[in-house]
Image (spheres, one colour):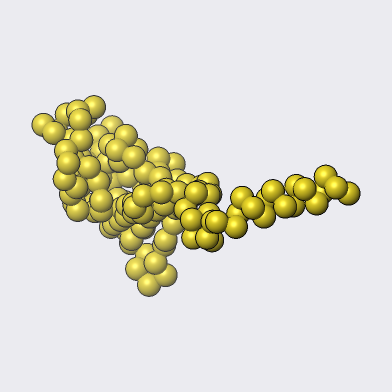
Length: 137
């Protein structure tokens, strides 16, 4: 019984001089990284070709996050990353179809310097991506 009383007295003495604000400043809880949506990278975008079918696009990029009920010719891939500490990052890529064939890609994509595959990405982002036509076989 004396031990519990002594431990409580010591704990009270240690925290008596501390305010609640200073304790919160010392205790730093862990915050997890939250990833939501479809992650689409430059390698995946480079596989797209004008004229690809919806099934071929779905195979390359996965199912779109948003398919507009009123505009069936547009698919949106949205990716949002919220790190435990730091700023939220969001990336949106829109694919437009003409009939069943891919027509164009727009969104937040990095443009490689010099137009070479594997080149370091430029600091700026483009809103429109030129995709080459599919090879006729």
